[in-house]
Image 1 (spheres, rainbow, N blue to C red):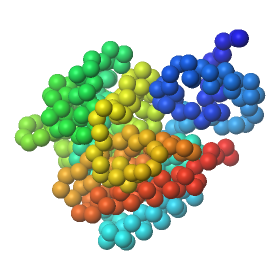
Image 2: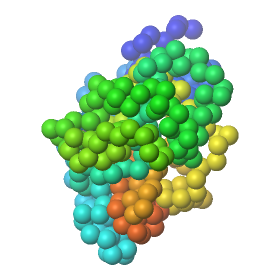
Image 3: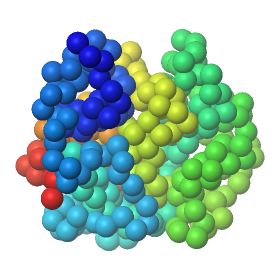
Image 4: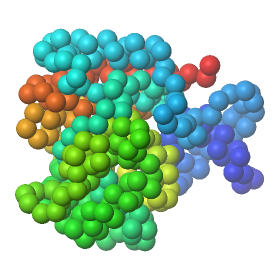
Length: 322
């Protein structure tokens, strides 16, 4: 049997709709078997067929999908009415990775992001310690998992002190995840916990900040294997999964409870700010969802929002090749 060449392998991944990040998590034998059996058919795909999301680009000019946008606006409007929230108290986004469909509401409105920017500390750790991609010791892996999965402030502060706040932000800026001319974005300007040095973001003076668009970009690049390196992205995805650490049962996780999905998420809450962000994968769907709220009932909004978006992906998530 001839070894699959690179072009054929890539074509098969597109045909099978296997995400790059997910493919990296598959056992080698399983992935190779799938590629071999698919090669004959997929190698002859029509040349006009568009590639999968591995080449998808999300920037400030990426068009929204009209139908998904209308559905997202309707979901947000219904939930805001249910919980007596205004349009200024929610910002949301969905990226359907199977159909390459994007929808966002207030994507570039910066807000205080509570614990969500801990994902920036994770990225900076691997950027500044590239050897960790393939040589991460068990204690550090668990500490990073606690920071991401249960939002441990002590772990987060330990890593941010080790790396340095300005160094962390330099990494985020190098990816364009904070852009002062485009509404800001992901900002880590204070060690988590009380006291200590503080650097407010240039636009809103938040100690920790984010925007919907920049969070969607972070997770897209993570799934594409573009954060630091493919191997580093794979290890970061494993840290988000951390199967030995239970999820906090709130927000998106509670909303998706009982559904056969994998949720890789980072949430955040403080006072009346309630946020959640996730990569969700299940039968017939694979998407990124982000929601930021500033309201006492934000947690309930997020639970219901997660269910409503997942319903949209189940009903409308078939691959779009138009």
